[in-house]
Image 1 (cartoon, rainbow, N blue to C red):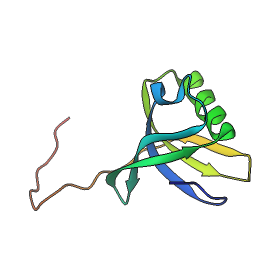
Image 2: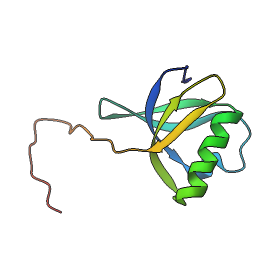
Image 3: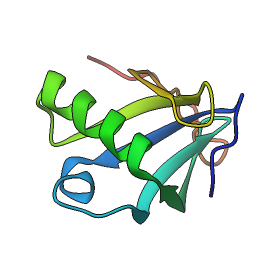
Length: 96
C-alpha cells in the first residue's frame, strides 16, 4: 500500500517496525470502515522521519495513527480513534 498526495489512512503501527529500519515496506493494520486489514505499507525517508518523530513525542510501543500525505515529501501523522465493526449478529453492551 502506498499513500498518494491528498490521501489519508488510519493505521496501527508498531514502534519496533519504525525504529532502526531503513526505508522499505512494514506491516501495518489498516482500518477500512472500522474493519482491520493487514497491509504492507511502503515507507520512504520522509514518512519514516514523521513516524519516528511521532513515537518520540508520545513514547508508545504501538499506536493507531492517521497518516495524511500533504505533498510529495511531507506527511502529517496524528493520533486517532477507530471504531471497530463487530462480527456477526451478536449485540451486547460493553461495560467499562
